[in-house]
Image 1: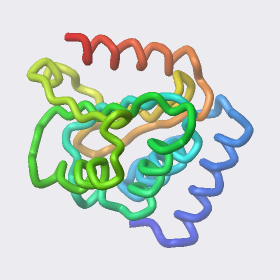
Image 2 (image 1 turned 120 degrees about the vertical axis):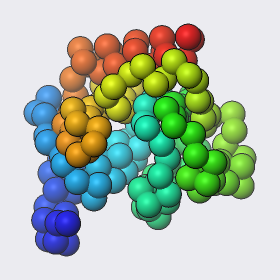
Image 3 (image 1 turned 60 degrees about the vertical axis):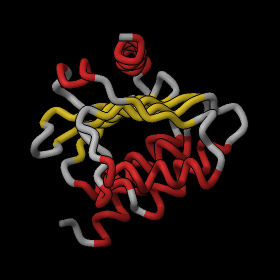
Length: 167
């Protein structure tokens, strides 16, 4: 686990990369780092987000700041959709976000999908506004990299997401 100074430094770096639309790729290899990346990307999103994950584990997705950033993004003018594509559905784990969506009346923007075909995809990823992304290279160890501005890879991940949704 990282100490609070390391996490604040990482948060500052992520915010700066987003603010300047940097194409620099940043590694993140802990749940704490992943929460920061997701939180900051939800805070900055303007139109759409696709999150492809193994599950919506309560330990991760119930983080107060992350939940707040998802709620605020879903309520933001111009945001059309936030889609969570879940490989392994565990009803208890999904409850925290589904309750938020229902309580806040966000069903028109936030959706949760689970399809058998999702099990064929090895790497988890999230893509925001066809520009920002987080890509897990190791689903077990949660090693990943993220980028605030790489439209080439982000558009590719968006296409993958759309194909998964359509399948």
